[in-house]
Length: 115
Length: 112
Image (cartoon, rainbow over the protein chains, first blue to last red):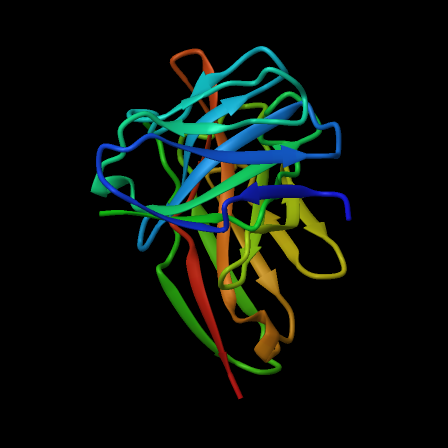
């Protein structure tokens, strides 16, 4: 089934450890996004990529890094996890160049707990 | 950084019309307004999008006044399955980048 896949589904991580959340889309969309969702704060954009080879910072980029080596994959890395990064992480993609006119398609999410 | 504002929660009953308003004072000239729906343990999914005036699809209507500083999502005759969180999305230009901002979301509870 076409769409966005994320891995892992959930993870418990010790503080200070490195973690990469994976995101893959098979719709050949140009733009991809990473959001975190916290209770009462809604969805906040972490990083985005308007096309393969480019990335940009969103609203809450500190402590996270991304890469976009190809169209399909957009991994999110926590170099040294901290408890405040406990959240649900959603990856999304859209067909165009990352404007608000795009329809974004979301993955099922990764629930991350940092202890 | 500019942001959107929505009511935190709303309650309704089956068969009623529900209107959810989002404020977005600093919306950019070329930005569209998009609404998403999210069920528990799922990612958000697209409902409707508009630029100005009124847009209607099979699921909802979207009303946008001339100044575009707010928008109202209208759900006709809601059912229990419409219980979800609804997000308003607009894009803001800040520091030369088009940063997409979700509102905090409105939790809609539909009662029998």
